[in-house]
Image 1: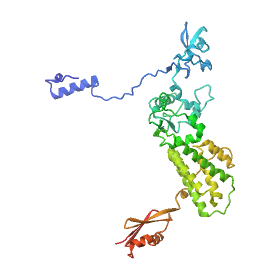
Image 2: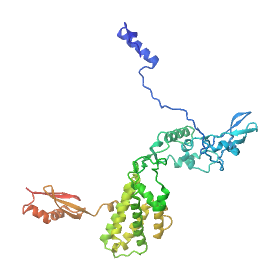
Image 3: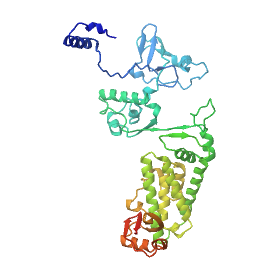
Length: 435
């Protein structure tokens, strides 16, 4: 703290000047930015990790392993014993080395690098895994990076993402890349909790055995169930009862597609029915495509379930032998491929289509067919609902007026009175105003 007596007896101007000099000397009252950077200790006393290429020689001290002897590889016969130490400490074949400087006996470093060292730049290496002279080929990395979308847990934000950004900036400064940020988009997924609403833990016995669920319900049903639990980015508690519903959905979808595969298409189905199926198909493609892009997997699954439910209702009608129906079941199979890859592959083969469903183009939709052909038109009298009738979406106003005034419920409400005004909102409602 500053002593206020320091400026006793001084004029205002003298005090201001001395205060300014004091502030300049002590940096008093100035703001500063600190990133709290710390040295990164990358060594770990673990087996898993990249070996540190150093040997220790009694004569030469600490000696780096020459480039031509890299990489130093972990032994495949390490003994994992409950000693609390890395198995490298007791692996004689790994420990014994030759000093690159004097040729004498040397001891290899047994610490390995923090795995964050690898995860901070692995996507660059993925672009050129066969490269043996450089970390990666800059031209190939330029083609495939930066990464379009990165998915990870929120706990990665502090360490992994920070290190990844740091490595990318260093590689940029070295001239190996042309950009500063490694990822263009970041999406964090939520955490699946135990049924009690706490983090799954082996010690508490709150974990769920996925192998048991896969054996009992199938991998596709489990995947669907995880998607359907709730919003992907929020997570939530595990629900052990809903997975059987996903299994039933898969069986129903299989039945619809398999029955279609066993029958050839005919052309005598009513045109209106075929149009309804095509509209249903295109609306579903629109919904699933949008939800996949938005990572809204729970509503994507809901769209697939609704699609199958509607097809199940009509699978015994003549429309189920039409070209529109064939288009619907093929589209359903393609839409199921990301979430139920095994079942979709089998259904695609059942339909007689070429291998593989996962190599096909994604279905497209016609915006004109995503709009419903008919709507439920609400008919009001003085703002109060009196009737609801099916009507074409693009019903002309004159026809809508006749439809409303011809309603028995509306006529009973009017009691012979003439309307003073008729307000029509296309595709939604018509309001008859009387005095």
